[in-house]
Image (tube, rainbow, N blue to C red; front, side, top):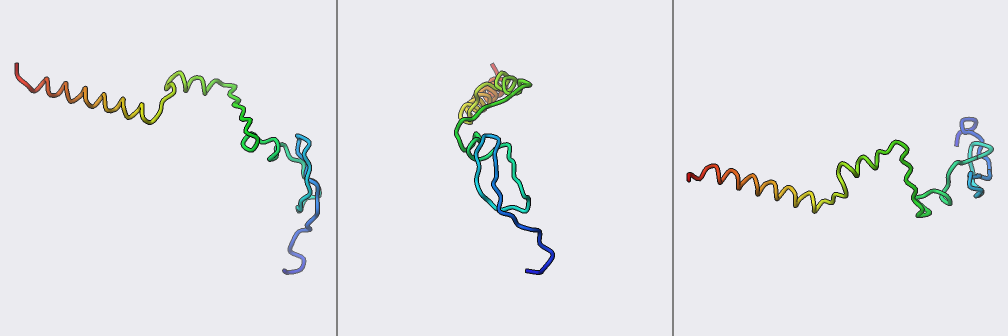
Length: 93
């Protein structure tokens, strides 16, 4: 390594807002975190959905609980109705 171009590297104690602490190394002398693996919803399994503007409710109201299978079934029904109407229009009575 070249002399004088690298920052100092300190052994620090990282502290999370939840109270968890651990030793690590960093170029900063202190590490204060808002969220860590002990309190993050992805790692704990306690997912919390915060939606202050009601976007999720609007989406579920508009689209409901759709699945890929139900969407494909709806498309098949629409195509079959369209074919029936074309056939009934072309056949003379």
